Amino acid sequence: MERRLLGFFSGFPSRRFPRSVAGRLARGMACRESLVFVSAWPEDYRRNDSDSAGMYEMFLEYGMDFSQRHVVDRRMEPERAARLVREASCVFLMGGHPGLQMKLIRDAGLDAAIWDSASAVLGVSAGAINMAKRSLDTKESPVPYEGLGLAGITVKPHFVPGDQALLSLLLSISMELPICAMEDNSAIFAAGEEITPVGSVYWIAQGEISPFSPQNLLF
Image (cartoon, rainbow, N blue to C red; front, side, top):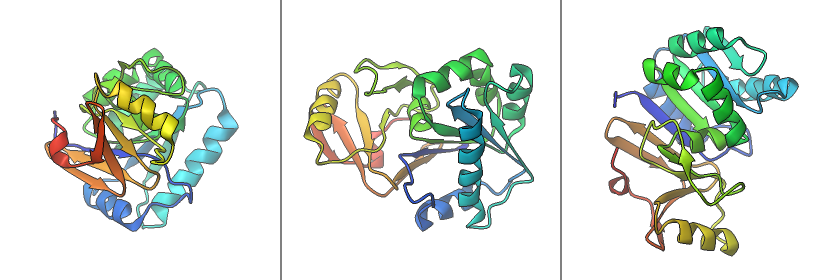
């Protein structure tokens, strides 16, 4: 695939990018004309406006302003949404409900628009889940579904190593599907074959868990 920046984020409870994450974003997004947020709560407009404003402040804290920004949810006509995504400098897939976000993406034709675009694509929580070829929402089902196919990585965000019930589930799923389990404030960046993990990321495959290494992934 193209050498565009992909960023998989677990979550940022403090609503601030860690400095290491912000530095990688700044290097990878020299062009900052348009930032387009894609909702994972497509009909909760007040929440979308508040969350997107808060996330934009995370960029501004490190001097990363954009000339314009937009929020794609059910208020926006599909044709306009697809055009904005196609023309964006950065598409940010927001957190929330992965299934609702994917339905919005499919209904509005944003999947094709994302692939047509050379924009950076960032995803947090639900958004990171949906960037995969094979996506996994363990809150809904242990069965993977077809994601956007931006990279051969399946993310489990908000991972807590001490959660034995969750770990047992992931170890079982990993017999068929390798998983990148990410603690909050962690990230995986990919640009072509260059893969950079930040923070606490684990590789769960064939029933075993180990620290994540870029060599685990084939893009």
